[in-house]
Amino acid sequence: MKRHLILVGLPGAGKSTVGRLVAASLGTPIQDVDALIEERLGISIKEIFASRGEAEFRELERAETVQLLLDPPAVIVPGGGWAAQPGNLESVVGKALTVYLATSPSTALARVGDVDTRPLLAGDDRAARFESLLAAREPYYERCDVTVPTDGRTVGEIAREVIELALECE
Image (cartoon, rainbow, N blue to C red; front, top):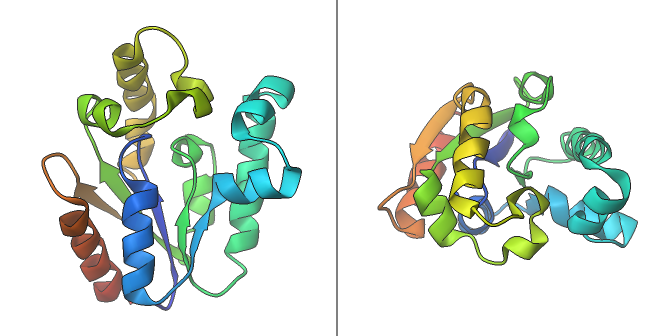
């Protein structure tokens, strides 16, 4: 891989799962931005949101991504809101292929596991939370270099399409 591959989409879109398969197939590392932040700070994303707020988390996320872009090419998996932050998509032009894993809110809701670790999904009406997140973020997601639909597809099918796109764009 000659440049980074950044997977974006709603929570439950398959960014981490697809990312692991793609990274293994391409022989490149996978960098989970949330995990890197948690490791560096020694606290969970949920705790960061609670103690420092979303704005500080987004700044940490941006800084971590900027740092990763200095490293050899990797599959980078930021949080679901990364693409919707001003300047993030623009900052990776020419350095990374951005891939929107397009997922309906109902599919994302069915796939997402423990929502207790996802501060923006807290609350009673999770379906409404997913609808709201998609409405706010989709205009940004759609600005990615490519879109890969995920509904009704296996992880393997999605990963194969992402791999083909990554190889075509080298």
